[in-house]
Length: 536
Image (cartoon, rainbow, N blue to C red; front, top):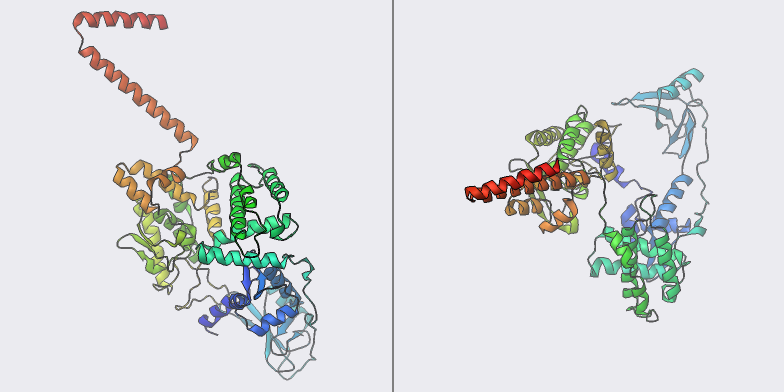
């Protein structure tokens, strides 16, 4: 099997978390998501996959995930020492009863191959040295002339049904309305999927609080109780809901019920219901308080990068990720969707093409590398050169996933991008701990650059260019949300201002003294001496 086929197969593997938890899917969406045939989906429904009948069959992402997890467990085939599953006859065969051998792959992994007594083909699995030793200690290798009996083990249950009694959508009418609102937000309002998912999550939260009652039966007391419930969970210190989260939830519900009140058949919903979801002024005020999380200085980030190891492919890649975050100031979603062709090394520029790159609000932009040091540029440029030597092309992802540990090979026509944002956070966590500074969010590197810009960008034109290079249309965005000083810098800056003002007042006094006549200077000198004596 060549690498291209292998990578394609890996992409087709069903992921139990592939569906968005609160997203609502049509049948066509499910077929596309899992790359399955209609008959397979029908089989899943027969196994008990929950769905709602509306103008079309609707599936909630949370139910799809739960079903996938159950379905995988149902079909799980636990194998004992010496057992291997045969994909040809769909049975398990044991090395204790059949001919077997060990195959060494190009990597450190070894395969146990057991001959299928029914087809004569091999059943195989990856095994450890300990398992090989256990088999060697129990049986002697058999030759092709010796045949053992077939150890047939029943696998999975053909009649098991998914326990869907706890299906999350207990109100089919509500689910259909949420699906219509999902379409409205995407097609009419033009919101991004992440924004829509947040709104759907907040609506589902209210529906659960209201015991899955019809939306059109929502009354004033239910809204008030829900607001009180949310405000009671508001906490800054114990990991509960923040004021900002509560405000977003209430505003999402306000928009939803305002839209719902205009729907045919939903006129019984009073527009006043939507207004009742308006957050209190206290919550709105608390939600605007800036988060005081740690923002590293430029020297700290540079120290992190230089302290990172760079021996293996993954270590070189991880170090380049940190270097590029500092060089470009891109958001993490853009970082993981860029391709090599979007990098202009000669001009020191990044082309964030919204047709390919996941930029905020799908905005296409060209940005220059920030002047954070030629040594940081070298780290990134060396990665590009090394990466191309491994077979990367212009259309390859800028930062790929790890090599397949079994096949240890890449296909020049298909390199899978690194898509897990948690991996980037893990890289920062390890690198920051290595030099003894607190962990910080990848987005905070943009704040590091904003603060550095306050130092190096002196003219208004330079400040504007720096702000635009961060992807901001207005300088105020950079100053209000990114350029906030921490408390220590704030106090030091205020002391500098105070000292500067004191020096200015002294210079003004000297200028006044120089303009006075000799007798006036004598009078002023006597007054100054008298004041000095009083202080002592």
